Length: 324
Image (cartoon, rainbow, N blue to C red):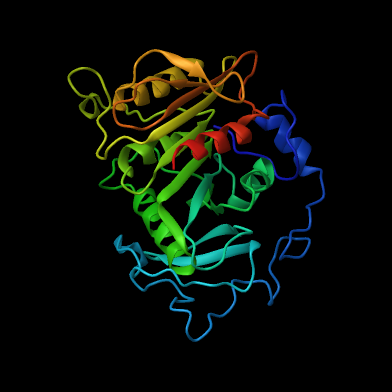
């Protein structure tokens, strides 16, 4: 699966490969809280905590243990908006992610989090420049753009040996050690291979992820028949999550049928009916009667290939708003 290009806006109908070439010719934009290269200067980090802040500047020493930080919500920061690359220790590695703190962050109100996963060969910085998702959140969401190890995500290894699933838990814990987040509203958005990964997260990390948005991807799936039950349904290890799938019917990189299988998995897992009604923006639809109380949405884009849909961010925010 392709990664995504760096730079500014997205043109509907431009393939991901074409967009990568197009955007690579553009000059990087200067970011609020960074210089023109995107590197933070000494004054634009999260800032030191006041003595009585009740939080910790550094992540907990056992950040990959899966244990949440102490229950408190008194974590003021020196700056909101884009604060650049953050680093934390996970097992034997230093892992990085790009961080955008909600403009309305006040250090005490719990704020939802959107994890945004890049495509194969991408980075958090690249997918951030591609999506421009922050503008649509009206200052009410924290955005985290993780960097995959070696520029990719493990969508093949089973949970017992897959390091990327505990990495996501550790990542959430690291953000929670720095910021006041709403752990009940942590969402995962992914493009291409990142979309496959978020579908897997919904299957194996549904205890920490509230909802997923998969753009031009598929899954959860496996080459092993042992991973399916007697009725042919993929066996997940956590309760189902809310799901939105976005796909072009002319996609030749990730087939349309792969996306249909993914959509149908979440309809089945959430025990929805086959009836649906429209949601904004068109052509998105929302399935009715999901017995789990979750939402399942499907956005099929006619005459579109493995492209970035220009309505996807509006669809994402409308979907997230349903998941209070």
